Each structure stands twice: as C-alpha cells, then as structure tokens.
Length: 256
Image 1: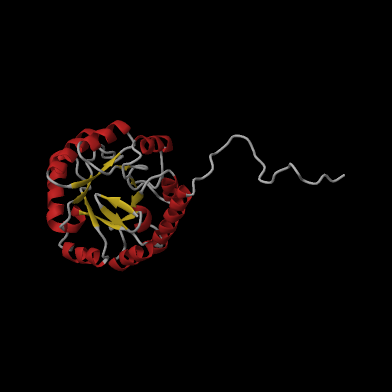
Image 2: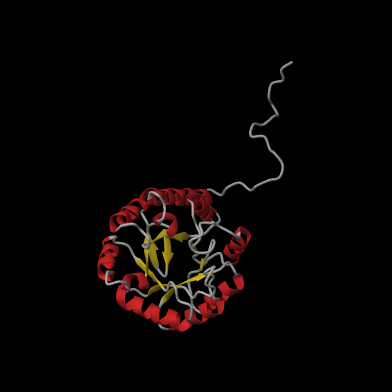
C-alpha cells in the first residue's frame, strides 16, 4: 500500500467527484473503481445550495477525502480556500492548485511554492499540483511538502503522459518522495504506464466522469493500475535495439 503523510490508502487510484451525470453513477463508478481517495472541489461543494446533499454522497463513499483548491489563480485565494476546505471536510489534506494560465491550466510555480510554504506552516498536509520541473519540485519539498503531484498533461485533455522523459527524470531525481500523476490521463493504458514508470498513484476525474459508461471506465483504470504496479515490481526487461531470439539456436537439431 502507498502512504501519504503517514496514511496508507488501499488503492493507487485517486478519483474525482465532479461532472458525473448523477449521484447514482458517481457512487457506482467509485464502487467499481475500488478508489483509495475521493477528491472534492471546495467550489463544487459550496455551490448552488446543493452542497450538503453532495457532501452526503461523498461521505457515503467511506473514503479519505482530498479537497482541492481548483480554480484558484492567486496565493491568497488558494490559502483562503484551503482553510475553508479544512473547516468543511475536517481534514488537513489539501490538493494545492495555483493556476497560472487560463487556457492550459498550467500551475504558477512561484505562487505554488509560496502558497505551499504558508499552508505547511499552518499544519496542512499539502499535495501540490505541479509540472515535471525538477527545480520547482525541489522548492516544494524545501517548503515542507512530502508529496509531489506532477501533471501528465493539461487538466481534462486526456492526452496522457506528454513528457515521459521529464517525468522519468523527476521520478529518478526524488526516488523516495511519493508522487502522483495528476491530470491529463484519458485511458487506462496511460495510467498503467505511469505505474510502470514508478509513480505511486494517479489522480483523475474527467476520463471517468465523461466516459459513455463511467463505472466501466473506472473499473478499467483500476485493473490497469494493478497491472502497471505488478509490472513495475516484476523488474521488467530493458528495451534493446537488436532482435534476440526467444528460443536458443545452440543445441538444436540440424535438418538436412
């Protein structure tokens, strides 16, 4: 099992709770996914007067909750939202988003590090949504973060792992830091690849919630994550440029 801030989770799948067509579909998707964590937007919870009903659905999932500061574009906004989330959900965990670009939803690295430092000093367990930049990652760890959440691709795009080299480099640079691929995954095969690369978990929402059959897609991701984790643990063969016969040629009978 993977542990984050001393808490073990039963599955490497962190699944979002937004955009589902109904509470019933949401609940079924979570059931079939076996997800270890439910992520919740404080803005979604508080919107439209339906927040209490939505929170009841989330509570019934019986999972650890990771609130997030989705949609925040400044340090002040993110910190304020984090405090609201801690009060509402009763957890020090917070997925920290400080968005720097409206179109790509790329994190603002400067605001992210500043907000992370403030929140760590205020006893939050910060899960920072960042890029694969190793320098930014180092600054976040220096600020007190114990987890890194690099993106696979921009949020909601389904493009998968856009920069495999950068992600592999980041994983190798900080081998002992728990890391979650957060955002951009669209297919279970992409999640399996993340696990094969040595990441500890994935966080996704749109790929499941917007599928034609969210529950089936959720189960697909669960199975892919398990396959990827097993493959990583099995110490897979290294790729090679030249062909190598799987059946030895020495010692075989010669037919004339």
